[in-house]
Image (cartoon, rainbow, N blue to C red):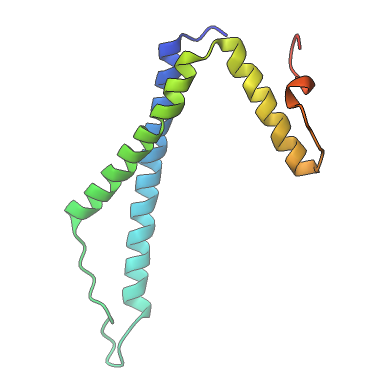
Length: 122
């Protein structure tokens, strides 16, 4: 397929890292939005918030870093597996997994998905 093992592993790791960054940013944004909305909508009878908002920036940064680190560490497993698979095997597995997914969606009973290979030259 033209991709070296180290490049394929690096792709998986970089995808995990970028997903961690996006997930961390989205999680922080949604968490702050929820906390702020809670102080505006959950009020005592005198108009003060039920729970005072105390934003800890070190904790927010720590939470975002945990999201990035966990996503990157979770990407290590597929990165390691991709580096050990020959290119023809990885594309064959993608076709088999795709057939299993299609069979579940459309209710087709596929007993031997490797017999239903699809793609160029198969």
